[in-house]
Image (cartoon, rainbow, N blue to C red; front, side):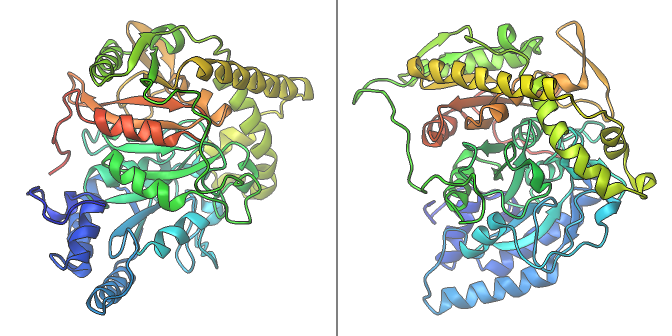
Length: 474
């Protein structure tokens, strides 16, 4: 936890969650002051960004007063005590609208919290807002017919990504210090890179999926922490991880660790790759990956450029599996209400179900990729890659020019989908800035259950490529 004697002169709404918790605990700030500062920030900057879909202002202020009384009474305090947090609207919140970006769920109010939401509450966090997303969390742009489109705070003409785009935009703009998002192909890491924040997609099953929609995709989806710093993401991950006795994939003990395969004192072995595995990639992003590799070498890691043993058609395989599993349920859900679907949902139900042969081939592709990475991580501890092959794209772009090559919008998932298909932990680290003044992120991937290594390295690398202390919308 951060030391309370800070020298950072940033406004309250740009302080780290860990710092805020320390200031509240030592009575240098009250929780009410912190919550009110974020409510004021939301009022000032959310209108052009449109990241907030449900604001819990009254309840948050009441929660802040309770938190301040606990401090005064000398009660035991959790790691997020008195700190507000935000929640992607795909996660259930008891007694609070959870509309999942779809008219089919307009007015939906769950009875219980998602496990991740409940764990942040139990850590002393105060729910502040629900954030925007695409319909069913199923697109790389956060736009829907219920709550509209979210804009990137660095450039309102660009997308903050999806599906956790409302969450990433809110965090980047200082509307929340820490939040909870989710990821099935890109949806934590991609939006984080587009907006200059950090996000962790942990090992599949590390964080319970309980209370997230769509439930049918629990085999592929990941819930995770998002924040402006890797340190805060680490705090969030420590709170979220561990079985809940409900999610059958969340079976790893909270303290489960991998067999490192390293001898005591042996340097961390890092392999890096960009265009040759995920190309085309924007040259400025590849340059960021190369610069980060050099910095890791200077920090004492053994670093080399690598050729991945196998990458295959990870996105295609994952798309077949994900759409093959969810589309039948959406068709049932939308029966008779098809006209209420956004283009995302309408496009999904227009798809033909994959054949058994195609579905089986996609599963075989996943197993081949898992085996390939199991071998890779026998030799290396960490893989360094781009997050997105390009910086934040214009709204609604169906094609994008990347390094002189025109690619479809789905290319944004080239370097993220493989790690959903394999369930490997992957961290999006805010690193640098492009010549267009848009954030550049880098991705660190580790073997299963080794989030600790990439969180440690990510904290050493964040903002070392020129991102610095720049802030988006004033």
